[in-house]
Length: 180
Image 1: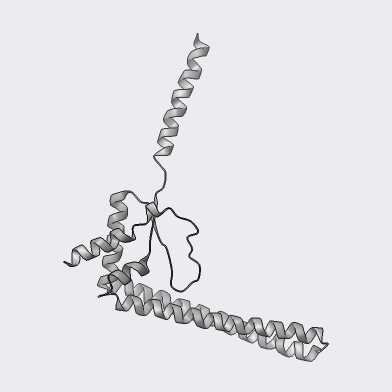
Image 2: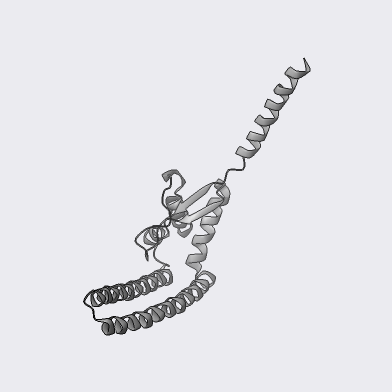
């Protein structure tokens, strides 16, 4: 008889452990900050300026990257054509442009981080958006909220999400409600 009790107790303990583990599931939400700003844009000027600057910097980085790719293609053509001196000259140019690009990215990233800190600390609009996101996340039990889209990249860092976790409309509704 005792042998039969042990499996039953073990089954109950495993069920309880499973319930405790199930309660620890992390809930994640996404919000499209660009859509929030578009819907509630009367105080969003500094944020839009920041996004524009990010976009302009990314465009310049892309342009420099394309120039380096073009030079790499020219180097390959020079090597195929037997022009060793030309290939070396192009290689030196590629090196200089690559180093410049690295410095440019490092400098601009630092500038953007500084501007983002100032924007977050000083802009009442941005602070209110973040407070609304925090309030919704805490009220609805989200552990993490991700920005769905970024205007400075072609692809979002979010590869898949359920529309059920998108709180963009709630953020917009609360912002509009607070403004009235």
